[in-house]
Amino acid sequence: MIEAKGLTKVYGGKAAVGGVSFTVQAGQVTGFLGPNGAGKSTTMRMVMGLDRPTSGTVTVNGLPYAEHKAPLHEVGALLDAKAVHTSRSAYNHLLAMAATHGIPKSRVNEVIEMTGLEAVAKKKAGGFSLGMGQRLGIAAALLGDPQTLILDEPVNGLDPEGVLWVRNLVRYLANQGKTVFLSSHLMSEMAQTADHLIVIGRGRIIADAPVQQIIAGTRQARTLVRTSSASQLAALLAGDGVKVDQSETETLEVTGMDSRQIAQVALENRVLVYELTPQHSSLEDAYFDLTKDEVEYHSHLADGPAGEYASATAGK
Ligand SMILES: Nc1ncnc2c1ncn2[C@@H]1O[C@H](COP(=O)(O)OP(=O)(O)OP(=O)(O)O)[C@@H](O)[C@H]1O
Picture (tube, helix red, strand yellow):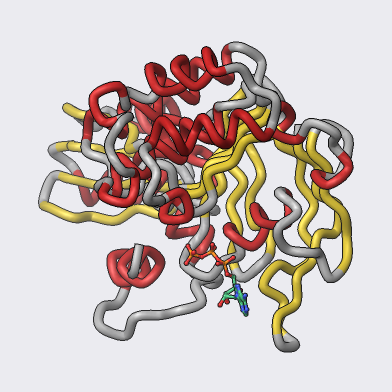
């Protein structure tokens, strides 16, 4: 479990992380989502004791990172895949790490197998592709069989098979009761991988809830209605809290009323409806809604959600 209380990091008078409090629970995958510069990496670095908080506290499994006697067994992290690039072979890199932490050689072979690095384990890690580097970084994070795993953008640079592998791995670890905290700018990926989301914007937590709740809660449910009497039905439905848009001659988009209520009004007024389709908002929609005021680097090239998305994820 990771617990942050009032965690703050100020750089040059500006709060990169501004007093965030959250708990990352064991036994589930928690996604950490936010636009560029939102404070994800800074938060993760503070969890790992690599950045000292300006104020506030953060503990992993009950203690600050630095106070753990065997930290590799408590928490493993992939913070910067490039940091593991080395002139040593992947195998020797992991072996050296294991030796300095009292971890048996057999565990090195285990993590190499878990991360699919068998074929390249004896090659120099410095020559690895980004994807292979990510796998090696994850292997290093898993070395101490830690209770808590922190992965900063773990699918960055991975091919689709690699993305699926990360998804299955974190699911497997969470099912074993481990705490898994991973950041990603890929909202669609998070929707499929995470159980719970913490969304951060400009150093502040803007959502902390199960994925499904975030998707359901941010946008009001919309229903697509096809009817032979669109104008008549629109007039009947419109009212307090109900918005009706007529996109085509026989098509309405209704917000603020669910399908059953719409069907009821149509029935009572003998209006023929031949399609009623609830429109589910995606995590991406939810993310645009949540972060639209929190994006630090706005693009002025495009308006609307697509433009915000482009600026929110630029440079990833
Ligand atoms: N060492 C540093 N010195 C000064 N400012 C920093 C430093 N590290 C981060 N920042 C600033 O803190 C803010 C948060 O950065 P951080 O890297 O934590 O965000 P992030 O959410 O991980 O973004 P990204 O996805 O772009 O990596 C940014 O405004 C960044 O410029």
